Image 1 (spheres, rainbow, N blue to C red):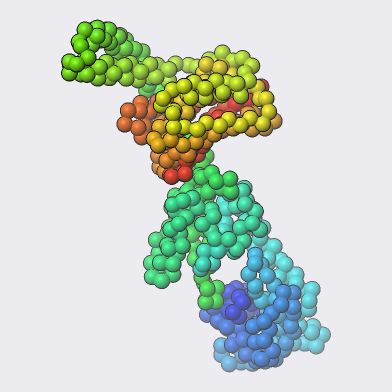
Image 2 (image 1 turned 120 degrees about the vertical axis):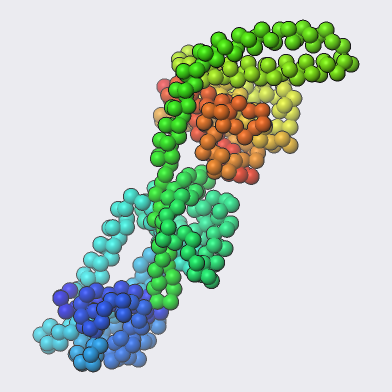
Length: 467
């Protein structure tokens, strides 16, 4: 493309959405005057009726060559040749117009090769910038439908650009936020009041597999013709949040470790001294005596404090699992069988699904402790009963054990804190159970993760190395 070639890109309404510097020079107008203007008005002398017909009903790949006089802003006439070409980018229809003011017969105006080279170069440059970006980039229309997505979207959400194109952007947003998105967008288009556009904020995203994760979202807006297009740039905050949580965990555990020995001496021993006499007094009082109920309540509170101290000591001590080859299916069945025998689990329906006989090197007592804690959490989230499903699947490197319940679930803000020591949503909870579970799994070289949506249950995932 020569220096005198002006390039105009128009949307499906024939409105200019992009121009190069040569186009501005040809018409003697700044870029801001050209964006949004009608191409057939700017180039009205270019076989106007034929141009309007092409802009109104272009077919993908169709081209049109027209010529005539073009008048710049000052009224001067310029003899030009113009080549129009219909194309489709990311599902949207555009028309590119290459206008050449060099009218010498030897040149003959912009030929096909130079025209297509200019288009290919421009599109390739834009795609390279977008597709190599680390952040996910999406564009949506006024109805909230996804028009384009870069390769980072696939890595972040699990959907290919082709799967997303034309779908509502709410597919990438977890409930309850997804239910409100259409209302937010409609309210903005009606009022023009910006709440998120131009201002970055932290939100939650939903992957193709249903899991949720934190991300930073920045939204910008542009107008192409008479339509608005919104561009979202998204950055996954999972790693950063994980690092922040690890720092909080480390500080909490360090503080617990420093005080655990003092607690054991100053609290645990007196608690043991209290428990025996209270129990003796309770047994000496008749069942009809109201004092027996008071003594029983005192005894339960002493035992609860003793349990908290015991868990603190467990959390503070270094874990060295006594690993041995274990059949994980049998281990799970053993824990589930114990749960079925207790009245606490009477309203729970258990199912265990194992595709193959899976073995791993684990400490059976510690692994059972983790499973028991997860089952307790599940039943406490289902006061009216429900289903608990335990399943396995393996990769070449690890075995994953999934514990899924149909309970109340957790909102994102609660989910972010569940592994913190002393954080609990239960009135009588110590907030140490999951912290201990995480420490046990890490001592095995594995991990524990929790995924949950409010009102949709919770999924706990245990991962242990195969060797």
